Length: 161
Image (cartoon, rainbow, N blue to C red; front, side, top):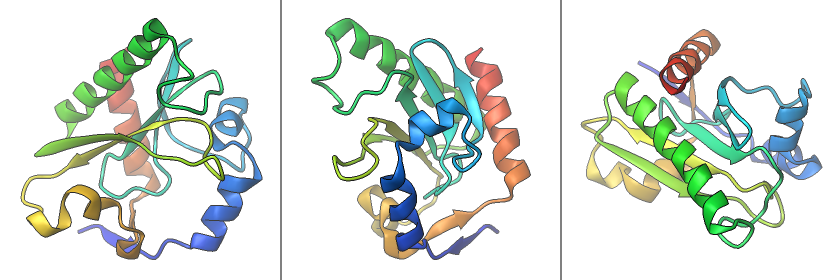
């Protein structure tokens, strides 16, 4: 059974406010490591460092954009949503999924680079622990073995290739 650990909110905020975590990941900054499943000219798909559920991945545009709708032309938005769809399809093929949550979170105060969370809710989660409750900071984050996350990223990437 995977355990949960308390999210160190102060460290998290310092990390997300110091620099754009997506741009730093794309630049290869070792202070921002993530397991990348897929990357093309449009988007990058990578495992969350602070997963709320197993298989919690993020999709972000390669180019720094901050607003989920207004920073994209209709064609650019369709292209990134195509990657979101492909990543969600791959996650659903490698994990048991009752519902795949897809949402854009972030803030102009931190995590400015727009990104979409893909959070595969496993079957059997009580209703009271579903939907927005999945993301509540008070629940902590999953403490997943790094090798398991790396393997999942590899499998998702293979299906997206």
